Length: 285
Image 1 (cartoon, one colour):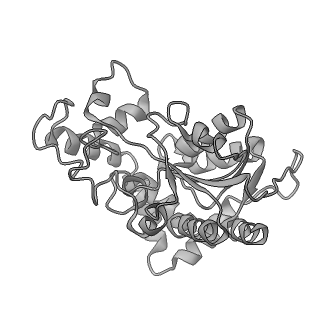
Image 2 (image 1 turned 90 degrees about the horizontal axis):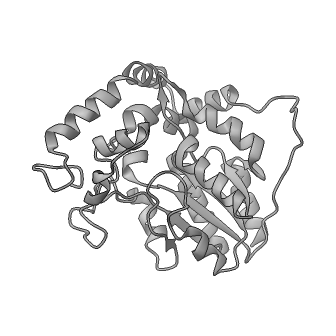
């Protein structure tokens, strides 16, 4: 597996380092995640989603102008950030901090619904993935979450041209998404390394196809998804974010999903539910 560093492979991280770092990261949110799991016991994902919708509901009387985006066939694409095991699966290294939010939002199923709707409508689909290679572990400085991701082996691969042990690893796609991503039509961009797409070819690939409107989903809400939103807006795209096709970490420092929702409302060209997004995509095809 990608995360199994049985020896120092040149990235400076051993199996023992990974396990120790993972325990430290997950311990900080153990109480919150346990509480969320307990709340779901005996209930359903739907009940959790309904409760979350009420908690994160938009203000009854918005103080800002209500903006929306129209889908234009041929100019609009679905962009999904990091639809990978490490973010979205119970087997991923971040489940202890994102699992509660992923469950509340129904994120895994909602992303799949967007994939299916886009494919049925012939809408272009772009994936902006997150990968780390051994040389990325030699950076001389890191931000808080960069250090965390590197320490727990998140999104690790053996090299840009090496797919050994990739299948089923934390860097791999969620299994239910593979039929959409690996259909020969989806554009998988080069990896982004921090949060936004400034260092990958997402912008180039979309501009070359005449795309100037984006329906944005994926992980994680206040990190890569939000960073993609800001970068794409700066580049002149219209962007609608699908609010329940993302999720965020809940840690002692705060609720990442709540932070993202507030910012989505303030800067996006649209903030949609998956139900609405699916209907709009079908109607525009």
